[in-house]
Length: 113
Length: 115
Image (cartoon, rainbow over all chains, first blue to last red; front, side, top):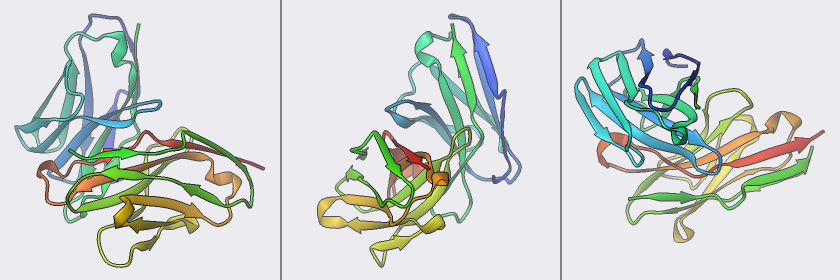
């Protein structure tokens, strides 16, 4: 699993509340990604990081922000959660020398009521 | 930007039947191609990948895929499925050399293998 840990595994929250999801890796990889998975849409990239404090937007970044103050941690924040952000969120890393192969975390099931 | 289409959203078949899942991508440049699998309750795992060379690639668990450049396709096949192949399958593409090494996924195909 390339040493990826996501927390929490499950979260239920209310509309309008802030939520932060954490992705932690133990192997010092440069590239980290946040995807959301929704039925019929597959996985869609939210944000990604290519180094400490270096991040960029993916295809569905509206309503999300990220931070990477340390190599090992990549945080995804929903500033004011909405019901449309109910989803399963996956963190992924690209292993160094891995030729674009991604390793995924176990996912976070987020429900916004 | 690249995009990926998977034509079948759901496939139901019996054990020992053959499986073929379609995948087409849209991108004008050189790509790397992947198939990932997600078993029930688990995260995504890589089945196989194509970077260059022989367009017929073999992956784990008896799966193979063929890259047909002229058709922008990368279809996944397995000659004889097992109940344990019940999963969701995702095709993905990465534009070679593009910033961020980002993968773009198709919508997925849910495969149910009946015993």
